[in-house]
Length: 200
Image (spheres, rainbow, N blue to C red):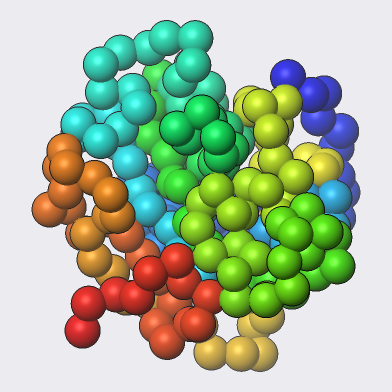
């Protein structure tokens, strides 16, 4: 794991209590800006996971791969999807419980040139539309697993107070057969940066 350095400019999880249930955190993260070494954007899509349902990586118990998901909260849980893409989750609930929020999509706002270079494309809408794309655009790999979200290289910035909060829609998670009926996918209504549209 990388050694986290204190970052006095990053508010602790943008005022979000990561010890709360993951669906609550997933909803509250919509509109929060996620930066890694200054690169990133507004979170527009998330999915919640909890040890009590079959789609969670911790459902079958703790192992070397998923250990970070068991806490403490407010840390990054990073895993490789299909042996190709690095995906980032934010750990929730009390230590030992195992729950998290997958960051599915961002609206790119900071250092788009860096993201375009990493992704090898120009279209802003596609830079971070999907969890694997988020990982690639932000330069995430396994070394980020276990890092604190309130310390460099992470910055989580709350939405400006002088703007209305984003309208949030919800629906079933994507690509899941176990516990698929849970409406634990959240997104900013009308955002063109979602990985996939929500059903009307």
